[in-house]
Length: 187
Image (cartoon, rainbow, N blue to C red; front, side, top):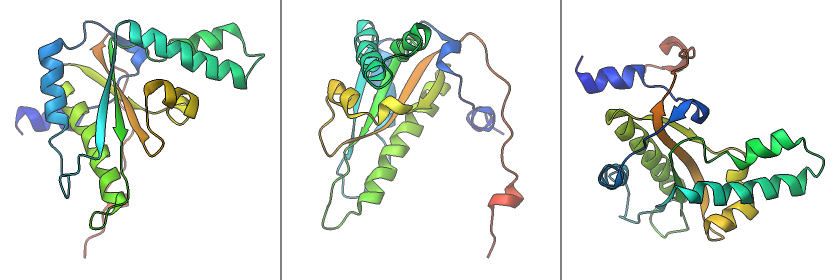
């Protein structure tokens, strides 16, 4: 098995709280985003886009996450509010992948959504190949309109995921994967 296939065979997510820096530099980030965008895209619609969340922006958006959480849970424990505030600050870099699928005369929306998912996976794999740890998460705030507004998502856009990228301070044990006999049908 070649090195890239071996990496895919052992690839796993690393929770952001187990990530540290440094994250990708600007040249690496540009390469990662370029690779992420090389996905099947029926009709060449590019039904997705990126929001790079780094540095102070991780904390600024964290404040919006905490405010939305506190509005819904006014009596929440301060530690829990702090956890929500730091959601995007745990990894040195977070890339939000936005799905911009919309009705099209030839291209089903479902294909456009799948293309955004492929963007997420390309980004994860490319970052892993560069030696970074990753986690593809959405969490509650990825569906909260107040937070999506702060991120600048338009009304028709949805969050495909937050891709957290950093260095693993610890790699957790792998989870059990499904047996192929349970998920493969041969005709």
